[in-house]
Length: 202
Image: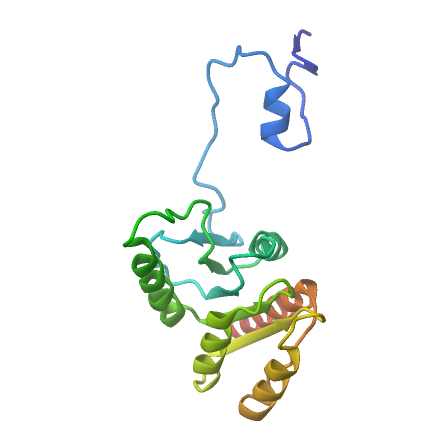
């Protein structure tokens, strides 16, 4: 059996594909896969990831990821990973590249968020401590006045934590605020699982 760079031919390598492929010589002529995946009858669906400004017209339950984008870590990537094995479509307003010098970019972004917030089955709010997130506070206030499902997470050191807690308790007392991304993901997973169980019963 020959070798392909550091790896044996016809072997399974566990790792990040980009890291592994960097260690291989440039001698791969063809890669064969067999999509589409998980479409056989009775299969479990997997999470669908939608990033701004992608279009989405699917029928799956969807969750909009509302929270800080500028001046804070990419928490959206973490929550997407935590929810990767759900049946949900995740609508992420944070995109890999924002054309900051394009004067029309802000309007296009805001319109995408406006439409996806209305389309989503639920909204997940995360308030990181690095930024106040004034737009997210506005969105939480607006959507708390509706019957849309919301999940609210606040970093323990977020500057306006008390405001979020009191206002949410007054308007949506059924919403349990959590203080970590893991806690937020667990709430979403439980909601998704409960709805699946109810569909199975009926």
